[in-house]
Length: 257
Image 1 (cartoon, helix red, strand yellow):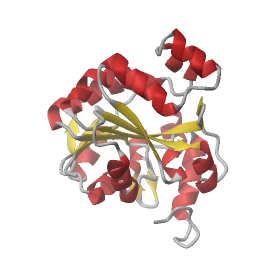
Image 2 (cartoon, rainbow, N blue to C red):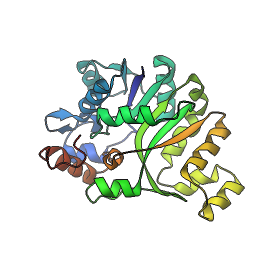
Image 3 (cartoon, rainbow, N blue to C red):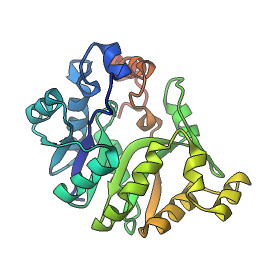
Image 4 (spheres, rainbow, N blue to C red):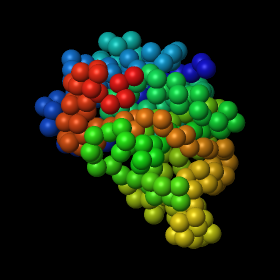
């Protein structure tokens, strides 16, 4: 599958706790085993076959790093949804979207996601079931969306397969922004769907299908095959965890292939 890729690396304003903890100006520039987090993400996308790779960022140092890595810097907008819309209109569909703090991202995960995404979906999101995360990742605190088919954690990997995805970006990214507040997500679905959620009868795919219907697109969830895909660097503890995982010898690291 031919695709382009967008890496969201914009600043939300103010000091970033993880960047401060690591002693750098921007989280994307944190060095892990000799490579910036941005470099690790670019390398994974390139190995997965991305034709064009763009980095949405305003910080001069991050833009300079993107250029050094052979990626195309794009101006970051006020929020991720607007930056994603700008990226889609610049790069076209299909567009794979991820974040600069996805430091464990691997080309195999990207390829599996593209393979597993339903061919008729305009928008697809990768999520990991709690059982898979607990199987593969060292003990770590993650936020789970709880549905009838279990708890699910976002993996910061999205596919905008068709131009129609443009109509869903605002709603879709607002859902991602509320990933730690599942009640706010479910409230968008309407009273009947909310009652199904409260009764423990709403599955993840049913929720996404309903959200897609609200936006006028076909949306789907894709189950991650690897639990480490749900580990990004949101907190200093996450950075310590990722550094330990990356530093492990290949024969000992979880999901090393």
